[in-house]
Length: 311
Ligand SMILES: NC(=O)c1ccc[n+]([C@@H]2O[C@H](COP(=O)([O-])OP(=O)(O)OC[C@H]3O[C@@H](n4cnc5c(N)ncnc54)[C@H](OP(=O)(O)O)[C@@H]3O)[C@@H](O)[C@H]2O)c1
Image (tube, rainbow, N blue to C red; front, side):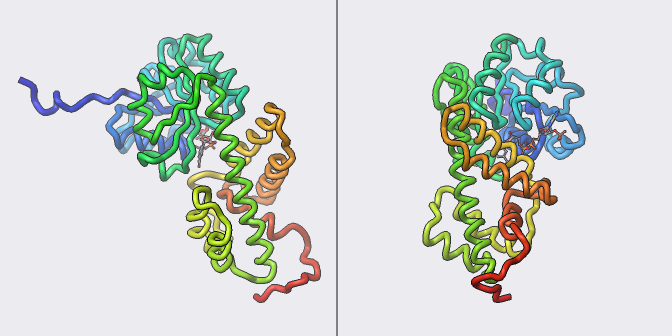
């Protein structure tokens, strides 16, 4: 006779390596679904919240990798992932490595080769939503690499969002990610720059956002976020708890480098990198991306403005 516990299907154990805002969201979503979840982070204290929710914090990276058949890395970039996993290469043999940091197509291809040399199956992936939407059934997650590995672990991947397979070339997810992020940043910059321009005449962002969004902004990219956050622009309030300017600079650099790798014009991407660097140089590195608004507002000592501020 089976008791009720026997009837509960056992979800696959998963290890999450990297507990920045996104890694924490991934671990949280896996725990919510009921996956036995092991975590590891360079700064162990960041695991406290997910450990309180049931995750196990591994003592070292080898223990973390050994704990689960599926190991998800969500670190700053590929270089960081290689450095973090280096002491655990023996433990990786026979496991599935799912790499979810951003980067460039050639870095993704190199990571796939790196994993193969160590006997690990590999999927490269890209997360197309901010941390609060991770776990939402509609959250877009892109994957590329072995389709067999993707199919085998689809249920586990679906615990974090809606997995979409793009093809056998491991670079495809990162390529799509950088293309879509380029679209997002260019749109964000267009909005922020326009808001700074009317702001030079004292028009508050909350007033302009409604006009701008309804006139032009494509609903799918940034529309609701910008209307909700316009008050923060007026208040110069850019909390970085869900993602920092430093993280966004990293993503922008990946877009610029991807343009070069792919033989596509890179000046606009480089320009966005320079703007984010300027935001960091002026003290906004730990704030969220909207702090670029401060760069746009304060480009130079205020000249004789054609339209004076109404403030
Ligand atoms: N946040 C978002 O909105 C978002 C959205 C989509 C995709 N992503 C992608 O998700 C990935 C993670 O992003 P994130 O927002 O969580 O934060 P992040 O700042 O890009 O990465 C933070 C993680 O990287 C680790 N790390 C950085 N340098 C390290 C080093 N030298 N050695 C070991 N670990 C190191 C940090 O460890 P410590 O905690 O010890 O510093 C932390 O675990 C990025 O590739 C990002 O592009 C983020």
